[in-house]
Length: 485
Picture 1: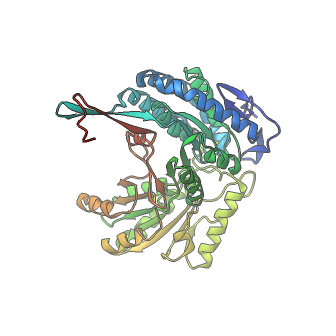
Picture 2: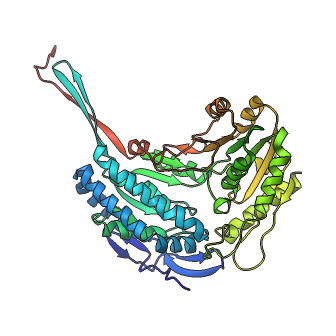
Picture 3: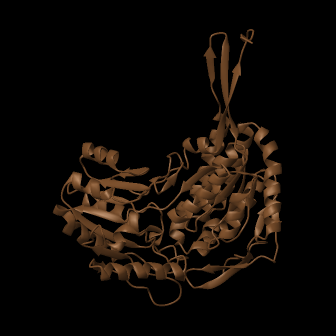
């Protein structure tokens, strides 16, 4: 193995690596070969207690620092990540199977963007002065306390930073539990934050399965829970957090529509549909997997999509020429194959791919269905794989109704050269994050999140500050108290 994946220990708590081999073994498997590249241990109750105590103890002094002081730490961490981008990207590729071509440009760099942005914003987290004659009110933004971050397996470095950067900027501490399928990258984030000057206990990484997450969420010392995961997982975590009146951010799954009108630039529309379905082997929560194409250009769109899909370079993720890697696990590949079989059985027309790729690792062909109807399983269920469903539509009103016919509402996109129609349609889409003549852009400056079953709260941008802090209001009376008693 050309890169050392085995971490020093399984957990990072109170500024150092911590091990407890009594926990259940978690095997870190490289999805491109099926090879075990590291073994770690799920957190025992003792490890969880150490992490909670450390986070609780460290938060108060961290919260009393000025935002500018906290911001310096985050900005230094951002600089370190950028300097080590290749090293971190290689680890991300081993952790997820995503092509190095992709991880070099998106994953650690996106995490660095978040740390830089919130590091710069930390000093500007202020309240307001409200004059009331000779009296006045002032408000201040104060930390929530101990935050729990629960990550998904598709963007382990990015998600660790997206959650920790605003949390730490606001003066909170965080315990981050990565997905058990991608446990390695968050440990490096923890190392770098300490190197950048973060006090011990401010950012901790605890590994484990769902039982570890449930224990963390239920603890009375926890004030906030931020989850990235499926809609079903989100419901369970949201309910558990609500039982303790904890603050929550739920960034959940989607079954998002991508609408292509007949006046769209076909080349751009195909590019957008590619990004919305094939990037990261389709393992992106905001993907526009329901592609509605207006009748007049459907054939031309499909012809060009298939031409470009045939040129996708599938192969060794460590080869920087590779564009398309494996699924995260054998189980996930089998789930996707099951959806493909359902699509064929229910009458959709398979026009591209549809098969597992023989050999090592968990590769699957880029897959496209045409003639999909709204009642088919592949039209309703989140597949989380490289499977694009193409629907035909005729009118604007019709496609808006069909696009919104889902319990989820994470994202949506529109391709058209009619700018009035573009804004009109996105105004009607029941989605938290929308794109016009583009898809899946996620700059840290823009809020990201969904509506309906796709979650609550927002990540990134100034909006995240509101979700990792709370207002304290102070009324100041300058004169005598006028009391009738």
